Image (cartoon, rainbow, N blue to C red; front, side):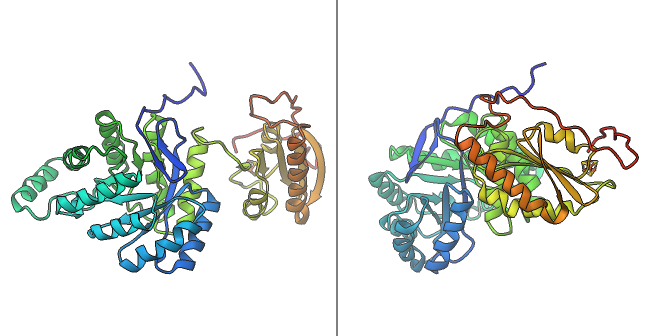
Length: 410
Ligand code: SF4
């Protein structure tokens, strides 16, 4: 059996350019999100875009329901650290205004703009400036609303087999929409076909990937709060990405969008689709053996060390002597705790024993020193193929009676 094998190759797609970000082709999977505030509140909108970009967003989408929003784009776009996507529904004029303001990409649902001549005007304006358009055939609003006969037929199909019927309708609508774009010889298209049901998302995008070579924007729509939406999103997006499908992702939660970016980043790092540029945190779940406040220590590590140290060192935070030494073995910097103190190791070498109140500061110190040594070429990261460091597993701490604990599942 082959272990840790590489993922199937990424599906070959066309490439589009969104400002300084490429989507599709051989470009890395792009992470995107959407602001939650009003676009016309320029200062707040820019503050949110900056926060999301710092968290790792490659692109940020903003809603432009009103003219005051597209007017705000004239200030937002030149001051944004990342390309901006305008989210347009119903009013094609907003798309034209956003393009005029210099937006880098348009999200358009042709199903919401009945007059095809208006869609063609948006396509012409994007073509002139080399701006791509995301075409959405998402579950919400995909069923025909105006034509009663067609609506009845689609509803009957959904009644018979909801998932199969929905995917068939999505594919038909996409065909219809893409014919408009292709008739204008416009191919800078990104496709999305989202649903709140992760199984439908997997099947819909898989079917689309077999039919078109346009890059795909993956997402689970209306996924809910992070506590439940995280499972839905990672299940669908992780499955698709692990099978080579997907060129940009947006995880969406009913919460601060910074969580969307953080989770998207972690997902891509776990799949090896984007390099990690901050510590990889390994921490035990704690159990009845715990003798320090490990949850607080882990939260403090995330707040401080993860923010400051910008190299992908493996950082282990373990609750006791049982599994602590084992995890320390495979970590660059590690701490394991017991009886109100912590033992810190750097690549298997014991560096310090500190009291609980000093665990965070001592760990941060060792991370800083280690990061400096890596930067100076004096140390190499574990896990990287380049590592030739010989790891000496630390000895477990003996119990008070001198006996050694046996490792158990952590
Ligand atoms: S046994 Fe494992 S889970 Fe329990 S405190 Fe120790 S390291 Fe953590």
